[in-house]
Length: 581
Image (cartoon, rainbow, N blue to C red; front, side, top):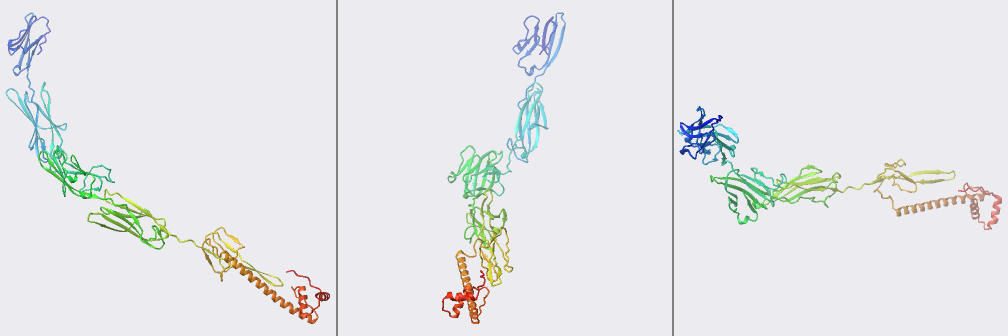
């Protein structure tokens, strides 16, 4: 306690407590302190210091300053002694165990503070936010007080993990103290949540997904993971079972128990059960049972595990076709898509150049669930089917992977034919002495694939481009000017046939000429004989003078020298001018 003295002439400073001497400090010399207070009371100048303050030290203290003029100045100060309260304590009334709360129950959070002088001030905070509560403090005659502050609460699942803080404070020099509690709400009504991780073409590999109500599917040969998650519930033991018995049992702090028949494929990692690889025989219902560490309640949930088998790659067949994809126009064929050994049977779909085609679907399964499936589509082949692609798509429930197979149809198309028609154009030339028939045959040839030549008009008409006329080639027209059909690039007559035709035609011409000559000889001979008889010779137009003389000799039976007779004839008849035929 301080008693400032500014007067340098101060003679003596005296400290008293309720008229009892505490210390006397002279201007010069050693301070006077009562023996009862020695060791607890000390002085520093005009100030007095009390070590180890006790409740008895509380009271009114007076400082009296006497100067050299024997004038006294007095100052009084009160000393209050505080007592630090004990550390606050939090309790929960209405809970079966501290911190273990049941949803829906009403509990009271109580913060206690004892032996404070004065009683501590108490305040509640919920996750850092002020919460109003009911405060109560009680003091004894010595000024010691106890205090409580209460907060009523109806527990919900939302309170799980919430932090409540109680702060105890007081007047200086009281030090602020705190106490906290984290609510632990037991989720007994909430069943265990089973999760799985399986490879899938829909979800990314390794993603953990809550199981649907219908169960989970895994692909045979893959890695299946089952996880049993019960939130913040303290776990004493987790047991995995299926409809055939125990799968795995994990007790906290001990080695997992796994049946020998499953040890090479089943592993336990905390609450997770891993089957690698998963087999068709693993299919069934699985249960996860969690034993609560504090309440010994069992939380159980079940799930169905379905094991799929990827079908074999699909195959397309065309029954009745002479060779795969080699089809005849007008025939009925059936395209069949086959899928084998799927679990379940694969779903099949036909597509024609990307467009869905309806077909007849059939499937059959054995006792183990392995199934074969076919999808057949029937069509009547046309030329338009050439090059068409049919695709068969197999699919199934996840995680079955979609596969595709396709076939391109090849249709045998008919060979293109060329139609050629020829006619003859005849020109007749006549002289004054005899008729001579001259025939010129003209064949018009078209370089395009078809040609049509009407025979009635005697003219040649063609369609297409690149027409050429070849007058050196003779073509025989059928009787009546018919139409000759020939395959494109094939001649009407072969070379031996053409030679035979030429030879036959030449022979006919020789016979015709010989016949004409024979007839003319007979006529000239008759005329010559008649002229000789009458004593006159007439000349026939177109006859040879020399030939007439020879015929005359023969007709008259003249056996003399031809020269003499010839001379006589020369005198009688002058030869006509020769006509060159």
